[in-house]
Image (cartoon, rainbow, N blue to C red; front, side, top):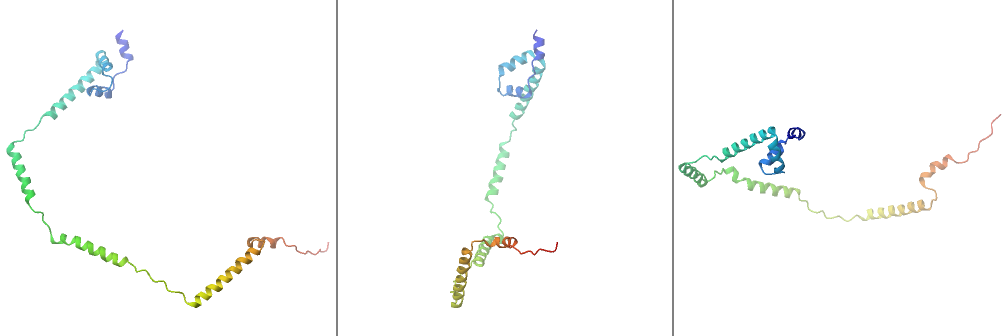
Length: 166
């Protein structure tokens, strides 16, 4: 009776087996399934062995002798004590940058121009143009009919038609 139930039950997925390796998920149900399913039990054993090999491989440490560590430390200290090579060209880079920025700022700087007073003739012309403007606005305001309607009015003007011979 246990055999037919086994075939009706689905197998554990790889994710569920990996979860069991790390103690995640419903471990009791998965262990009871492993007890009854030989295929899942074989996969579980293979994963468990692979994890064991990976852990043992990472646990192995390569031993480094104290003499090698001392030599390595000495080389690091020697490199730290050496001054960095500085070429003459690199010393002038900040100075050249500052000078170019100063030159660009002076080139782009513009003095505010003092507005010149308008000559009296221009003021008189402005007064005339203002008077003309007020006259035009007043006349437009007095017209009852908008300017855009003038062409339409011309279409509807009465025209006298003479009767022709019939």
